[in-house]
Length: 241
Image (cartoon, rainbow, N blue to C red; front, side):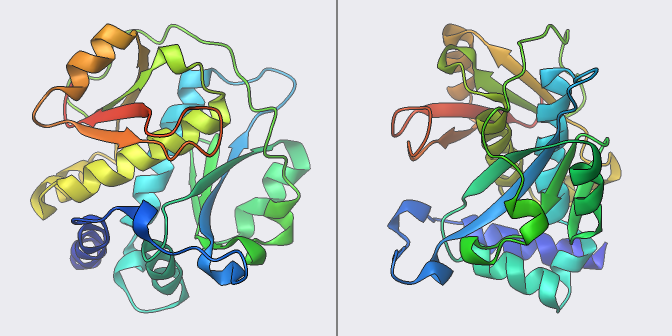
């Protein structure tokens, strides 16, 4: 738990009073463009439910940020620290079969055999096994997962944005990470004791606006590089439904 406390402190420090859009990115200096890569296991045969994949991605991001290794000295924490100093870019990629199995050995966290979240790096330094995974074609149909868990955080998505599963995975990853940063260390420890259980639900715009208006809401606004307009509120993370 001491490592988790230190990992949480580092996450809070990175997120406090920050606007990542103000951070410099220089195309002439590729090391300034950092990203967290997320591989989604999307086999052609018997593909997973969309919500299942999104929940795995959201859990994977917060698990990686609060991993024991994130609270220690070493390459894992150093990579996170570099990323924390830049924009919180996340890139979701499609994996399947051997390509999915091959990336399991790379530093990161896998959840439910559906999503693996990798230690961030400069985009020029993405491991070749990850770089060859396709960024597009991550569409999965909407599903009907039922009510959200009553005793765990929930991340709501504005369904009207019709984001691909890959885009939505990156957004719910932002949400879980920022929600953890908004928690006290004791709350974060309690969530870790639940193995970061959470729900992801895609809801109508009116319901989404109501969730965003709650005082405990953590709302993610997208920079608008892909799929949605700049400053769109994409997800809303809440400690409870």
